[in-house]
Length: 241
Image (cartoon, rainbow, N blue to C red; front, top):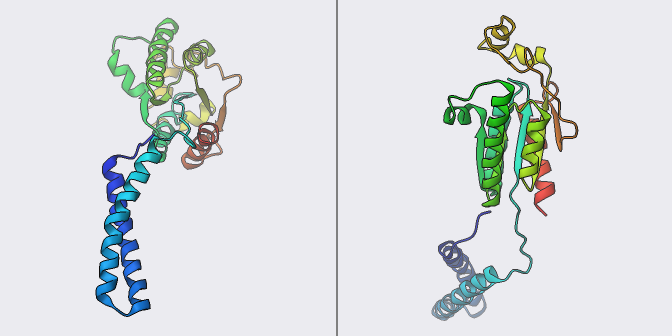
């Protein structure tokens, strides 16, 4: 989460005192009808109280009373190809950053570039998933929240990731093959049906639906904004008190 710096505290102190001092000058002038007296009183008050305010702010920043550390977490978005994982994951990450979370985004489109020789057989996918799960768990242990979006078609994959991460939030984007295929501008599903793409999830390779995900989003009935609201709302309720 974001921590207030000394510079910010100082700027806040000055802006507050300027407003408060102008108020004091106005009150003294209205009571005594003496602008010189009002200006002197305002000047003394400005100097004395800005020092007191700054010290007060910094002391409270060191007191743990009323403070609660926000534990990092891993949001793992899974679903069929073209079910909206990347788009929704991007939106969720941006919303969480605005709230104040430190967020790292992991997505299949980027991670595959780091391991270009990784294939799409079941064994290759499991190994690839384990790499991502390890990376996510390392980021989490170092205080960074993770929004990961991967097909991760096998329950074994997702269970492995859950076992590595302390606060694991599985998000299942429920969508049928027909709906995903309608969104397919690159013709991946069609090529898979013709046999040009091997081991394509939903066509020539199975997708094992999550048994008990923390969040289930039916993307056939919810738009991107509604799906994002549901996921971010869950995170706020669970991790922000």
